[in-house]
Length: 142
Image 1: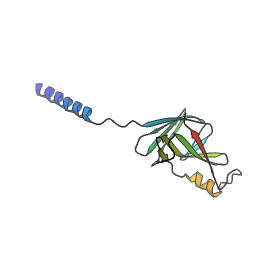
Image 2: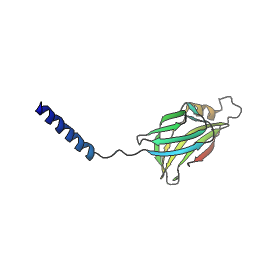
Image 3: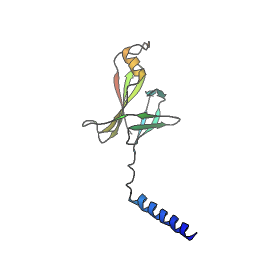
Image 4: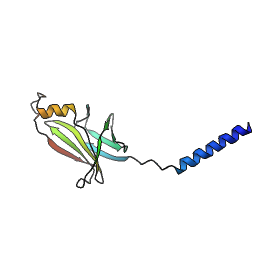
């Protein structure tokens, strides 16, 4: 019995030392944006509102709003000119598609083109307001 207690205490001590010596996980960068229009992320349409965007550092971007959200795999990118946090949308008529998220400090994420955006860009959507070209719309972060 005494041997089991000593083994358990030794194991707890070793695990405690390892936990203290391990580097702390890098905190995810968080930004908050107020988006005044509905927008598409991946295959999901999110309503207007305030969204928290978190970067976990592994190419995954988490977008959370009140009652809506999305998780997206993205390509991390750097820019010498874009240093302020912002969201970049492509607008086709009255449809907005999130394409870039800039977290600040020249760090950002490029989101993949969605099937809906390919459809809008080619003009096959049948929508009277869609055009083959898009307008870039930026939403500055609060």
